[in-house]
Image (cartoon, rainbow, N blue to C red; front, top):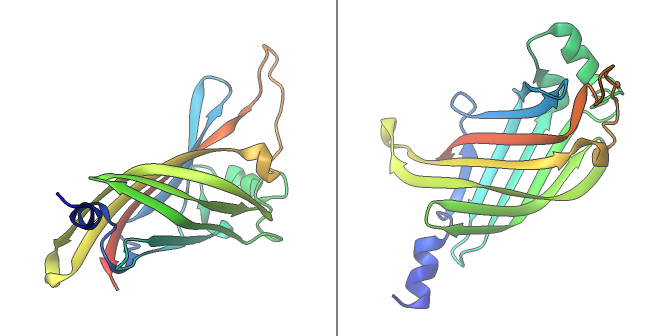
Length: 184
């Protein structure tokens, strides 16, 4: 296989792909009380993947912090407070990536996450499948990505010591995106 053929095989599908909000999700998880895993989600977000003819690609995503959801309204309120996301002062979280490498179905995405006014590099890994022709003859791809951030690097510092040692909330937060994307 020539280098040109290999590039075509491993490139992100050309064109602009937008997430389908009904069939996509963005979540986060963090250790809670040292032993358990707490999960939440961001329900109002946008994601667009653009693949160019030359094999380069970009990924843009933005989410509204006010749409953070947990299993408890009081906890959701605390997470949106200045102790964590500070939704009133920082209403949006953003991710911008231009370093996207596809190897078969594997995907590595290098970009920058902006959260609570702080921008830091973040590498995500995952998979990409498609395109396939779905219902209504729409072209569809699936992108699943995950990465880990240290929440304290973004100013999400609240915590409480536990009587037996450790803290109520872990610092490492796992981010997961499950995106069904349609050609725009």
